[in-house]
Amino acid sequence: MARQKTLAGFDYVTGQAISLLTTEWRARLRLLILKGGFRRVEFGETFGHRKGGLIEFEVYGTVQL
Image (cartoon, rainbow, N blue to C red):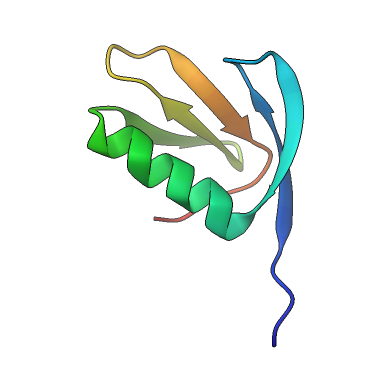
């Protein structure tokens, strides 16, 4: 079984640094988008925005849907 990649990030809701598997970040992005939010990538970092634009989390890497 292949080892999954872990990416560091920051959760703006809890105010804490977190590290999740890429698949876990992808699942969080999908859920956020289903709730009306969106994904933004800038300078190699991925941001998850809630509906209305508030940033929910930041990933220190690019997470594809």
